[in-house]
Image 1: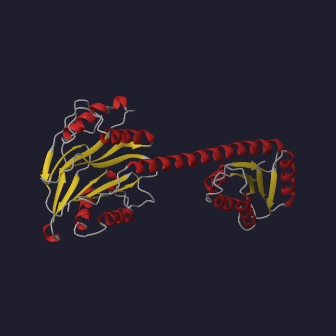
Image 2: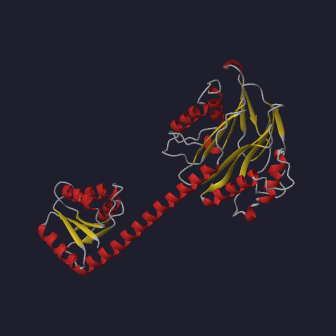
Image 3: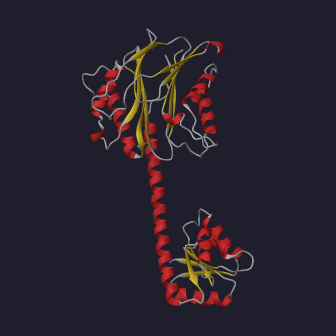
Length: 378
């Protein structure tokens, strides 16, 4: 049974509306002024409110504004009862959040019809809200599943830590690191275009494919060959028009050599140096189109020597494409400077970086998934 709240300082109007609507099978609650009406609305969360516009104390527009700004009452259908019939007055009512109007004197059939229509819309709003909450819960579960697939931190012989902070919508970030043999470590991070399950599923597929080494006759020690094989396997035509960027590297701990290739992905950042005065920053990027865009895309390798006390950061673009409080977009260069500034801190480098990004972000959550992997080689 739907509950309807009537707010009117005129007792005769209260009685008339209550009598008409009770005969229709609705449960009726009444209030004689705006303050009492708001209290009753908070207490009983009615499906529909009929409120007089002109009342002492809080008027109908003020009551409507209070109701519509309360998250628990936002789906309540609000009808203003008024003798004002000008376009300007109705505009004021709509701007305040009113959903409909009933003009005095009250015509019973019109009242019944508008109430039925309002309750249908209220029920639809409730259903949509329920579906939205259910979808958000399912996306949160999917994000948790994605997190469960990601690798655990490593302490020896190399220290590897990582963070995955999903946005409100499930996205396509994914990363992994594992030993190809006792001396060579494979590391990669990928970011599928878009959001939702359509973006997450290709990421999971790549992770499972590389982790199980299911791509036969492939040299997993050669990053460019890995990217070429992924590009052949994950063409957009067969993947719901989804493409992804990826940075893939192999580190040989005996030779201290890092071989890498990238496909449209942000560069990895290698920072070395024993003191702030001799810090060296290397931007590790190779040319290459995102995986899935063009079948004939070519990828190339590059390599570098990893000095003692070096740190390698691999990340998605969500780490630096952040909208600041002034509305401007942060930059990759600024992000790199933050990484360099914490390099000589012995502990909690990743936490310091993330704390800075969280403070910089102008919104409650990040607009895009944020993934970052930190490898400390000594």
